Amino acid sequence: MTRILFVCLGNICRSPMAEYVMKQMVNDAGLAQAVTVASAATSREEEGNDVYPPARRTLLAHGVPCPPRTATPLTRQDYAAWDRIIGMEARNLADMRRIFGGDPEGKLQLLLHYAGEERGIADPWYTGDFEATYADVCAGCAGLLETLKQK
Ligand code: 4NP
Picture 1 (cartoon, rainbow, N blue to C red):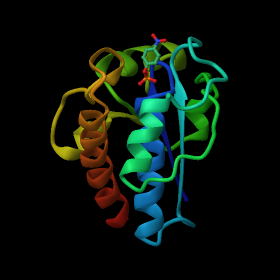
Picture 2: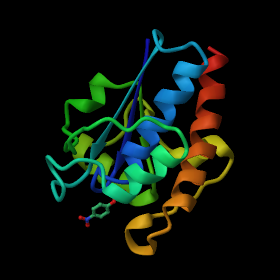
Picture 3: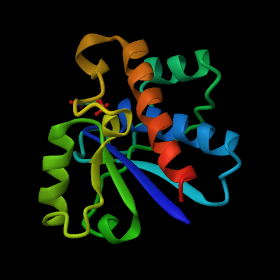
Picture 4: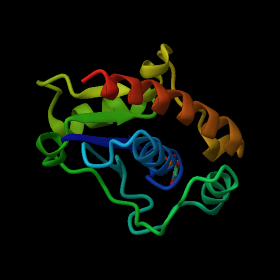
């Protein structure tokens, strides 16, 4: 079993989009029994809130299921609970190192690293461009899926 946790600031836009896109890719690849996927927040800003409506609409428009969920803050215990802990932008990685007290097992990575790019996922919170976020998330998740198939 590989356990994957996606992380962003609020856990209502980018990381839930990554969670649901990745779940669909994992299911379609026949890996649902081998991979667990979830997401969490580095802040408490949106704790308890569901996916931001424009993010949900974008997923549904692309045929990606988006069931109700609640934004959940990351805890120090998450470091042991997950195998790969994947941030949407550099700030998420810095915040995670603070919350976890470092990254002794090398579990942290940027999502777009798996697409061969060392940059952040397009942040829709300020731009309103959820399609750009969706495209970036799909590129990162597709690359991540390839690394799981190689196991
Ligand atoms: P997310 O988007 O980190 O992609 O879920 C944001 C959600 C909330 C805030 C910022 C970004 N906020 O400042 O409350």
